[in-house]
Image 1 (tube, rainbow, N blue to C red):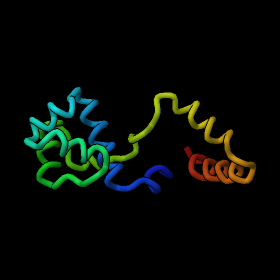
Image 2: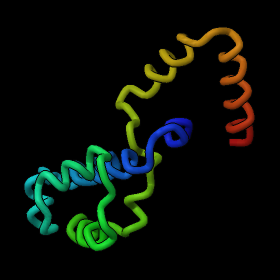
Image 3: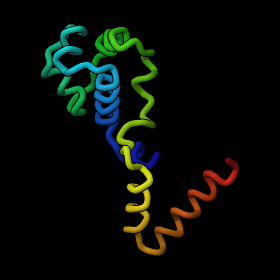
Image 4: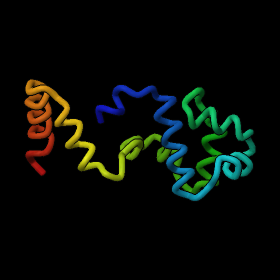
Length: 113
């Protein structure tokens, strides 16, 4: 969730579109052709340089067989395969005060699970 707070919305949307495209096995060239936009436009969208229009998002959702809302599910964006190791590395690199804050956040957020 902290990643979401600090990342630009255009970049988040672009990363999510890239993630969805790759999950469906499309190259940028293939998806852009199916959607009817230039490959350079899709590249600009995926890199977060600009937002796609609603019309383009609608066409992409149909090609990818997803709901429009799925483009805005940012919780999977940038989650590494080795998430346990990454979490440990991040925590280990913090000073004692930050480690205490991380502990309190985790305890508050997950104590009822």
